[in-house]
Image 1 (cartoon, helix red, strand yellow):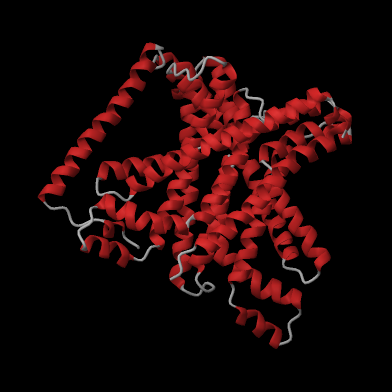
Image 2 (tube, helix red, strand yellow):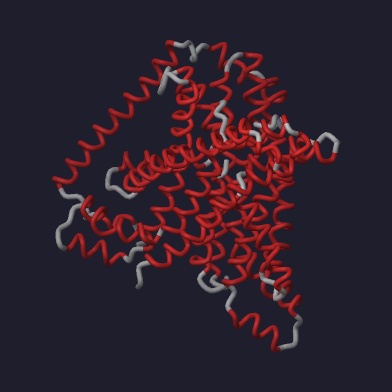
Length: 294
Length: 224
């Protein structure tokens, strides 16, 4: 079902009246809720200009919010590059013909996918220093945690992508005498990567959101600098959090629409591996949540 | 393993995972109900409902859960004065449930909506042809078929939700990740066993759950 409109008839006079009533009732309920929130905020003085004024000053942005956003994006970017490498290595590992490569790779991927990222970060940041007897860099604690989790998710996505390449492709490559590593690196991975491009970009959204976990181990990202530190000076926790949320929503919406554009583009060219739709659909649900994660 | 022979530490471990279990069950139920409602709104004939569903998904799917939990605590609890229980832990638990449910509902909604798209249009057309209303079409014909198509994605969403509940630790609930942090700080010489027990518990429960959902999805898939 491609269009939702197939679910209901074109509204006649009765349906139009009913829809109008529903619109009004729901609209009033929604406005009532918003008004309640507004009045509670008002009663607590949350609309006081003192609390909102900091956001009109440039120092708020240059000292707190932008450096925080920069650190968020930096951690996400470094983790993305590393997760891609991790994902490719372990996807190839899981597709190996040798059981002694396939099994450990599978175990690693399954393990890191099942362990909550926060637990992982706590272990890396608070636990590993006990083992190495050196303080752990907080940036790397965040990045390594993100890499292990998102890399494992990407490994599964790549594996699904390689499986979605028609068998004729690898058979033809073997027939002209390519070695297994050549088939993988020159035939399968490039095609799989193209089919998986939208998934990779949506995983980036997950990554950006997951950097917020760094706040919990006090990495100076957007929430730490833009909400925690800023509100320590101005006492405007909620206002700062609202601004931070808007920034996250803008950044992630841009990435999401980029992913949507990519997937439409790959589909239109029609040269992507067999039914990219089916392959992506299966996989997107998964990383999406990962995001879940945070 | 000496750490866990101390009953005090074992208690920390058990309470931690009990919170995770409770958060997963309550949050999952809330997210499923909310998510189905939102999906119904997003395909409904009423523009306001559609707009509301779309706004919900775009806002909550793109905000980190850490920040949503933060809002639940500072917004709902501190500012709006929504007190859900007298006991502080229980209050934080319910705030966490709201945060997790509101966040996950956005993902459930999108999964169900993509499931609705897998149902052939002929099904809805036939339903309309015999005079069913929108709600009847949706609840009797479309959702049962869509539901069977989205078991695998819903399973992954449930697993992600379970892992996400660790974030509720930020507002002071001693769930498993905070429990692990405490044990690590108290027993610096036993870091690896502590991590393996906590991470292993998640792995042992969640990996088979993932395969179970895959199996179930295959079994219940609508054959076309």
